[in-house]
Image 1 (tube, rainbow, N blue to C red):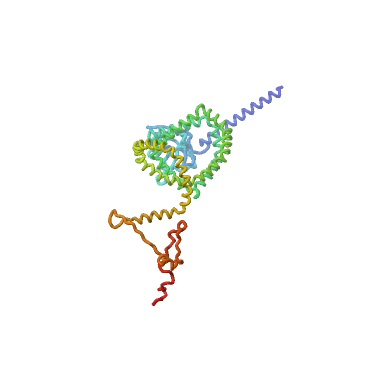
Image 2: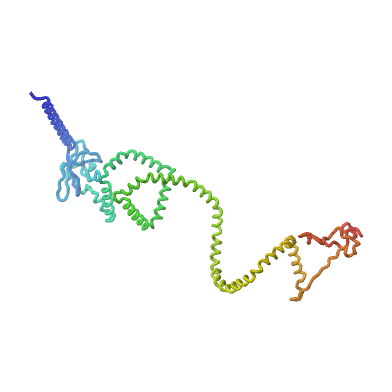
Length: 434
């Protein structure tokens, strides 16, 4: 009698064989269904000059809808005869039908797009081939790139190569990027709405970018040098697979904390500096206004300063003689000091009469003014006699008193009086004495 463990292993083996058989049947059914073997089909033949990577079982489509597959590809006289199998429910094919080999994706996957034609051309006979002149062959990506000049193709090749090398070994990061793509697309939608709003003024931004591009157009050499320098800098940063940069970033947090403390401690001195700058700002503005005058002074003083050495050379003998003179006058200095001290009192007394003394000398100059003949001077003297002097004191000139000792600044206010006192002559204004 078999043991329970043996029976269990046999059942497991049978179950595995059954599962494998079911998988094989499902695969066979799927393959035949995809190839259209379970449907009634009709064939159509098309001639192409070039089909590139078109293969059997590739799609045959009408107006981009799959209606069949490519069942075979034969070559005759330099043309590729492509046979397609269509399901019986597909539209009829006419003599003016045309086909085109198109690409599903940049990965060289192809399909044939068939235009059935129009009924007025008549139906296409069974077994007839749609001629190559009515069809369009495959346009490979390499043929598209042939329209580019050699430098552009080389740059595109380098770009693809560099992108491939950059993505190599980055599958996990790329997978993470794809996983976060929905959120990024949502953010991109928000960004797009913001860019399309009137408040953002995207046309104004584009105008500014255009102006910036025009200004940078004649600075390509400087930009190229800047990019080269940046590349050298990035290469230096990435040396040793970025180990120095990683070490620097690890030390950055404590350094930033220390820097923050230093910046906080600088707050008070900067506030004081702000106050000081506000205080000196008016002076600085005034200094700025005087700079043109100061510049003119310096500019005009150059010729004068150029003559100073000559003047100094000429004045040197006189200065040397004055040195001996001052040496001889040195014993007189105490006596001159005593003299000035003694003159202090009289000068203080005469100080209030300074204007009167100046007036005296001015009038003295007028007293000896020049006469009619050149270089001949005359002294002029006027005698002012008042009523009191003219009458020997009989009439007093009390209404117009004269002070023989006027106070400082009052000499010009003093008058000698009239020859006839008030009241002696009739008042002509009132009409008396007629």
